[in-house]
Amino acid sequence: MKKSLYFIACCLLFSFCNLVLAQAPKKIIVEHSDFADVNQVEIPDAFLLTGNVRVNHDGVVLTCNKAYYFQKENYIKAFGNVQLVQGDTLFLNSKYAEYSGNVKKAFATGNPVMTSPDATLVTDTINFDRNTQEVYYNTKGTITNLQNTLVSNSGRYYVAQKKFQFLTAVTITNPTYVIKSNHLDYYSNSGHSYLFGPSTITSKANYIYTEKGFYDTKKNLAHFLNKSYIKYDDRIIKGDSLYYDRNREFASASRNVKITDSINRGIIKGHYAELYKKKDSVFVTKRAVAVNFVENDSVYIHGKKLMVTGKEGNRIIRAFNNVRFFKTDMSGKCDSIHSSSKIALTKLIGNPILWNGENQITGDIMHLIGNNTTQKLDSLKVLNNTFLVSKDTLGTGYNQVKGQNLFGKFLEGKLHDVDIIKNTEVIYYMRNDAHELIGINKNVSSKINLILEKNAVETITFFQQVDGDIYPEKDLPENARKLRGLAWRGEERIKSKDDIFPPEENVDNEKIAKATKAEEAKKNVPMKIRKETLNYDKKKGKK
Image 1 (cartoon, rainbow, N blue to C red):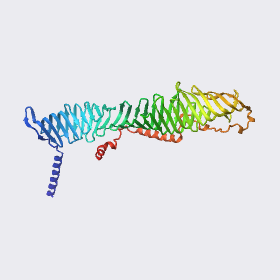
Image 2: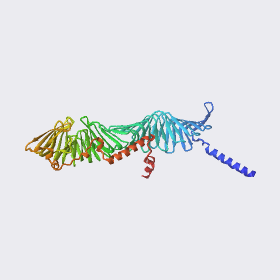
Image 3: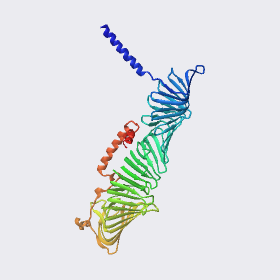
Image 4: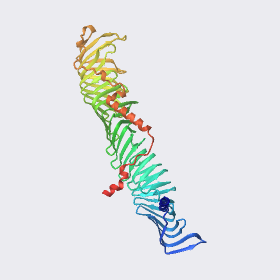
């Protein structure tokens, strides 16, 4: 029994000794020195090494002109042409350095320069912790990497990840742009930058603001989140998620997209957009709406797809598929819209219908014409099968004017003077000042002129070959009170800017709004590191 206990105790003691030996720091080994000396007066407890000094410690090689080696403390001070080398991953050159073999830490000063396969760091003092494989500095430093120069007041370099991290003011200068941030992670091998907190990217082409983003400095590709926007000379594009390709000058945005045209005072919104700067082209979809400011009023145009192309002064807006638009006193629908700023012409294409106040206007071809000098609506042109209809104010009948073509003039943004020509027909409920029905005017003529006040017919004038009469209500049967082709579509009338969106797009919009709110409620954290960043050298090796 005693022998067994003795054997167990010996085993435990042996294991403990092995553990202590395993944890004990390795000694610094002096591999070469031209001269070695001991001077207890000048440098107590130290070896004085001079000439081609080379020492090794656990895989790190340090060379210099002169060194003080404190064997007891496992510590070395190096002078002149100092170089600390760790494999092929890190080279630290300076005039002076100190290294502790016990804690495996070094610091270098005197014009220190750290180089890795992908970057070079120059600063006043560089610290290197081999345990965590981190290099850090707290004085102004400059890092060069291919075409990029990074300047910061402090920084940290993670050797294994090849990552620089800056938590104070940092600037990346590239021949094309300048990045500024207070929190930036920069991977020197891939050139990938991760921005967190208020950050800007400035270039001749544009100005970018983000509070959470990714930028590939080699490929000039970027992804931005969180209050980000891209500002061009005449446009600002915002969205919950922005993608940017600098080489193609292409940007796309998702969710809560807003593009502002600062020159033309226009806004385009949607939940997905593409912007091609070189082509002066914008494409927007998913609850897309263009808002243009005309005569102190806003015109809202919706289509499943919106396109804006062309330079300032020659800009074209196109809207496709189930187009709807709204202005305070005017709204309408058609299959598509083509609007040119150069000639101030807006074409309503495919089954157009226009509501001006209580008046419904239809025809095969419909054009709204502006005045580029006054920047106001000037006239309306409707060709072929023109119909102008409104409900009688008190009765159940309809006031109707029918003809081949319609030409209208606007006054202060409101339709005021209307001519309907060729084969015109009229059915009109005439009332006195007491709103009593006088009779129903039914006639035909070559031309009719309407004067509108407050979007209601004030006067009607008939021209040439007038044939008809005013009939008492009882003398004009119901079937004679409607002109051939009448189609009242009052239930379709767009009465507000919210009516321009179909129900299914409103449902999608509510889902996006909930998702946005949930995203905003999450704790604000830096962007997740991409796989292509983490696997960059692996992919490089495969090639």
